Image (cartoon, rainbow, N blue to C red; front, side, top):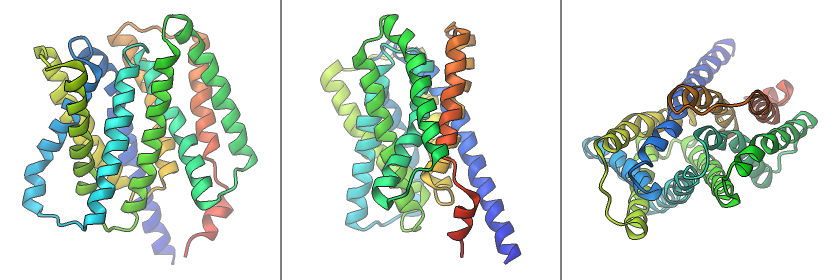
Length: 303
């Protein structure tokens, strides 16, 4: 029993490390997106990134030959539309009017949204510390976003960011639902949603924004984000969700806003005033507190 507990702890630690690495990679995405938006429309940029990532995985898929039941195909297609076509389409569009750091705050809302989905689906009660965390996140978010809005960002851009957060939270719960059963492997969970969602987003982007003509810099951003920020990071994330709850993984992703703020400061010249930095820290702390689980409750669920 003790050995099983040690093995479980080691597996949990490795999975958490995978999400930490994914979070570090994704922290650079928002800065890279800002560079790509200089010559491409947001929908086209996102579509090229995700569909190219899918194409990178096609040789591996062909080599493995992974048959899936029709119902799994349908679910993977829905996951792709939710995460990439809707969620990332909204995220990339929001960054036309929001700073990269504001965009990274998407991850601060995901744990709260994921917890809400769990309350609805499994009737889990919210503890007092979790409620306090919600209050901290709401207060910190208001403090952070007021300067964004008064500096010219429209409420529409903030609404798009909110839609992206809902989509990512939904995707995480759906991935967790399939990953924990082992019915669909990590490669399929990563590749096929990318293919479905990326293709839909690329078609939508061309229809709305016209045929793309990326600059060499934009192509560098697209290829880099496809290979590293998408293929590598999502493989890490989907594999980790075999051993972590969606809420546990999403809490770790709250490392991204701070990292993005530091990266944006040195690369894009985006300055975060002390008051807003404090708000950022409060948001991250509140989101983590909102996912707090009593140790005794965790232990009662183990067999």
